[in-house]
Amino acid sequence: MSLGNNNINTYVEADLDYANAKKVQASVNTATLFGFIQLERNGNKTLKSANRYKGLSKREAQALYRAKENADVDIILEPEFETEKHSWFFGAYRTSSTKVKGWGVNIKGIQKDQHGVPNR
Image (cartoon, rainbow, N blue to C red):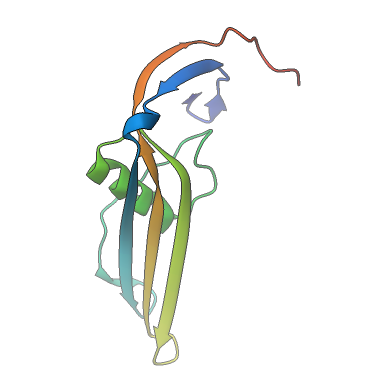
């Protein structure tokens, strides 16, 4: 959990609905001309988390958001990203495709961690 740029560490146990887990996937395609003219837009909605999904590129975060929203799940476990980029006319026209695949699960409940805080 985070507030601004400050992380607040909390330890909880989540009861995940593994029985209804489903494969999820989504893709984001982009096309630019001269490096700054966007020919294919994907919106500004991205999925980022201070703890779970760190270090994602904008396209990866957009694909993750789409997969989560389309499948109506709370968490995507083990997301795998595949990115393909192409360039034509000495880099004047560029395309990229980013795909994400993973397992989508919902959270049935959250409870306080009874095992205590791990040693640091």
